Length: 257
Ligand SMILES: Nc1nc2c(c(=O)[nH]1)N[C@H]1C(S)=C(S)[C@@H](COP(=O)(O)O)O[C@H]1N2
Ligand SMILES: [Mo]
Image (cartoon, rainbow, N blue to C red; front, top):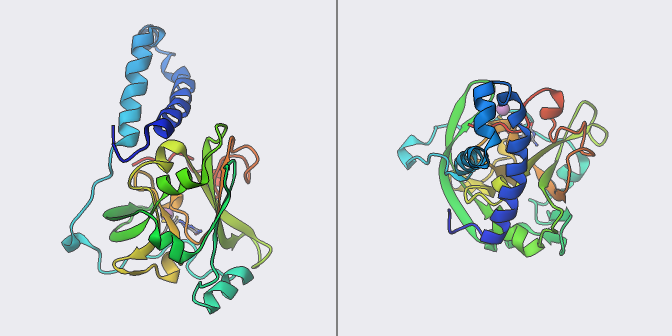
């Protein structure tokens, strides 16, 4: 177990993820042999245990020599939302990250406050579902300690990232990009709210001023242009109910790599 993760939160996150694993056992149970193993508590425990160890493992990290010369921007690269443009005009001095929903203490954090929070720097590989990869060095505030400050309520199971950029419609009217993760990923030590890429503030094309890095999953989970993080007990009322802009259009919600 990683000592960086607060045990109380991890226990809750694992219990929630474990329930999801068990729900997923239905397909495997179709084979009579597998069904026999799964019927025993031991078999179930072993399966859950293996999956959870996998979920909390670290993504590979690389060296400075491995960093890609250009970190390819993808998806939205120039948000046109009026709120975003107003903040950009003042170099994000007035930017505040809202953290609300099922939390004891809703937060509104400036970039200076985020920079002062416990941070992590990591050189990781970004894998897009379209089939390309880039290696970059990201620095950001670790999400776990920020959530501890906000104090998740016991019912919280997921974090939804609400973004500035809009799709399927004109600026100010379209659907803002959204994504979500569970608490296992939220408290994973490599999950950060990144404000630096390769030693510079994150460029606009890569998600300025703040983007998620959730290193065990594919690119579309790494929400750029984050404006609000909402703690929820269910994804049913978010967008089309599958927890993300692309998941609502057919992609997997859990995009593990
Ligand atoms: N807000 C927002 N986040 C986003 C996207 C987007 O269009 N809007 N695209 C996603 C996809 S598909 C990928 S591959 C990465 C791209 O990140 P990059 O531009 O830094 O390469 O951001 C992800 N996060
Ligand atoms: Mo992507």
